[in-house]
Image (cartoon, rainbow, N blue to C red):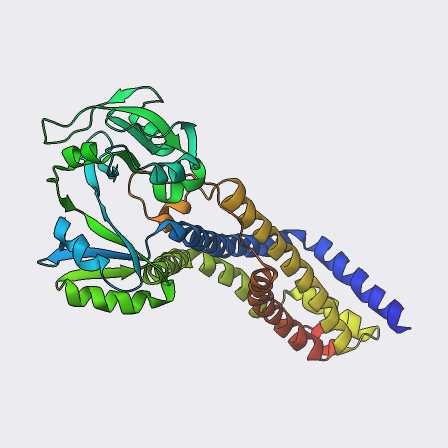
Length: 401
């Protein structure tokens, strides 16, 4: 018998064997596909979220300075800006007004961000021009008009649309109701879903922040590579502050998503154990019918390597199809359906969950790693009992030995 015909015969036998034991093949393949889908979905989602956070990091200042009192953030003062403007390589220092406001209707916080005014008393147009490109509806703010721009998710939860007026629960009686004039696009939901943008005076009133105080200072540097050196200089000039560099914040995001992904995978142990139980059925030995079948093949002239090749093809067929199905299910779950049931766990929002469409960050290396990590042990577990059966004397098997 030629090599090609022998190979075709082995393949035909492997396909026929799978057809005869389709229930067992479907059970093994289904369990394997489910496990692959769960693992791949967590990896796909964590990589996509890290990619989104990297893009969002472009809007973060090079250095952020916060004052700490008793280990808690406290207000910065107007004089602090002057202390930092003279540092070499510092291009600008901006006092930012923002904070959290609890909304009983949501049972959660929203982030109030104040848009500053320039020397002429009009709303800073450079900041609003950046916002304009991220709006899905409406327009930017008008200075002194008591207006707001919110994340689309926040507007939805509040039940308001562009043109509606909303009063916010502030302890300051001078706080004005705000008119919604625009909503952010879902593309920036990851960092704008719970944001309420308004005039700086309205933000101060809502947050009860006195004039001249600021939440923190945003420092723009000429050369981002010098951010660490500038941070040390800032600490020397403003003792008791916390200096946060953009690169450090990016590493924190990466670690946070990685840790959450690890927790989700750990919580998936019961599903993975179910797969191991199925795989153990292959390790613990073949059924009586399969052992007699292998003994018959040996008796008609098949070698041990031929038998192992047939079982290898069977395992590869189940493993490859199940792995491919699991990866496709994971891709559809994360990037087409938005990862329901999984996204909230990794993102970490408590009330308002971002609905931004995720950008696939899947490469061939990642797919190959998942495939090899699954196929190698699965095929190995399947080959061992077949080798034991093929090494046994066919006569002994036929006699029931």
